[in-house]
Length: 94
Image 1 (cartoon, rainbow, N blue to C red):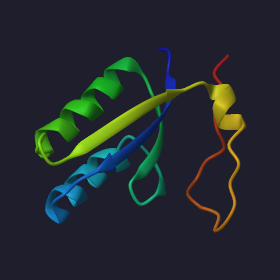
Image 2: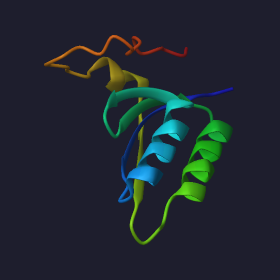
Image 3: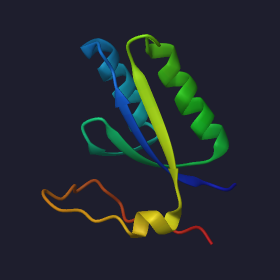
């Protein structure tokens, strides 16, 4: 199964929905900031994640964005500030 690196960011208006969307994202990726996750997903997992988030969201008030990245782009990430102990090294799929 081919996987794709993704950066998922979201802005959810309601604190209750925000917690629910965060819980969905935590089951698919690694939190790198409060509303930002890095994920390594196959197509089926990507669709399942978006469907689960969509069930929680109110379309007129909330937003989720998924940016597909190359694995090479992940190796080029520059991090400054407090390191995240839960952040794994990017995986390379050959």
